[in-house]
Length: 120
Image (tube, rainbow, N blue to C red):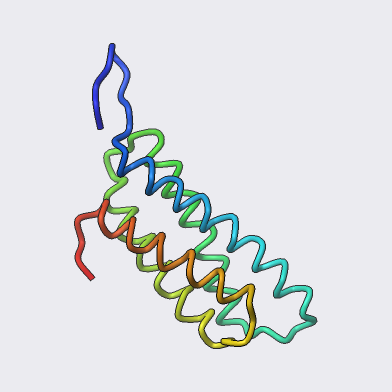
């Protein structure tokens, strides 16, 4: 964080993490819709992982944007949810949408882990 004229600006790294969280949130939501259109072909574990990841990435981005003092802890939890979602998406390796989602989750996890200071 940087102070400028009484306001706090996010660092470049934090802004990149916020962007990764929002991108991950968006693709998780798109993937949830994709899964629902499959007519019950996706299992509950994938759906739960997608929903958890979607919620946590949005919340994590919100907390970083408002400079919450607990955003680092949220980033650590977000990284864990993203890892779990990426793993769940790997259960359907032939599904291009789930593969894109897993990639976004891995990127977000890396960014959040870096922001939290927690190593893999």
